[in-house]
Image 1: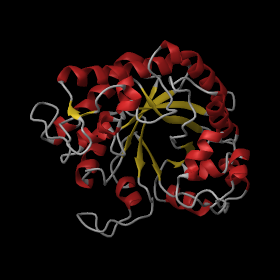
Image 2: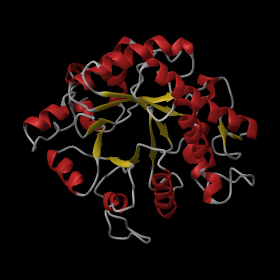
Image 3: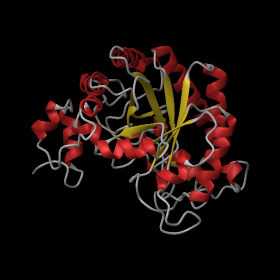
Length: 343
């Protein structure tokens, strides 16, 4: 990476309905690379149709997506940024209207109507992530991030609340992490060491227990199979209100763990240059910008010129977002975020 700024993976609703790359999505991402992000990551993309969770979602699911992915990787790397895909399966959060299939989950889930996956389906999903990594590598991407956070399928397997299986994919933490561990092993065996691999995790919420996540974090670091772990903290400076880490900031909990050679990035309400400096001083290796990257395509360049740079206040106008490289569908999506867009 040429600097310590990563564009966080952001839902933008701009792909074609078959998952192929659109001009608006290409412009949005390549513009961030041009604006100085040292690592530019796609939205959470589906690797198999059963995992599609929202309209306008990018696909990394087969040769029909290859040409767009190749163009996108080249467009990002032309500006000196590393190019990464992020791969997700929505699990119980998929929509039958999009997939034509009943949502799946580690266990039957009455609230969402999702059914338990068979072992064969779990193996097929593991393989789909590996195939997505191979397709990403073939298209010219430098690496891939596995999305294990935010209540999607892999996070559902991690959750002792959601995952009620009694086979090797349920029960103890080692079993509940098995699907992720198998994906990591499969990607490393198929793509080799030159293809970078990362994992996004949530420390709490979505059924996550921070004691389990910190334990798993250290196990992953000890394995040496990941280049970085992306902790989605929602608010990087929030303090734990209970448990063994009560009174500690989330960022300090994870930066203090033994990471070996695995890098740590965090995301969550990083809007000011002072935030970036504080995080780097806390021991984070690089920062992931979400909202800030939406509001300023050139946030890293702005910071380079002025370490006290701050993101513009919200709400902003639709015209402002259009000038920052968001297409009409992305602007409409951001309008659904409370207080982000005027009117």
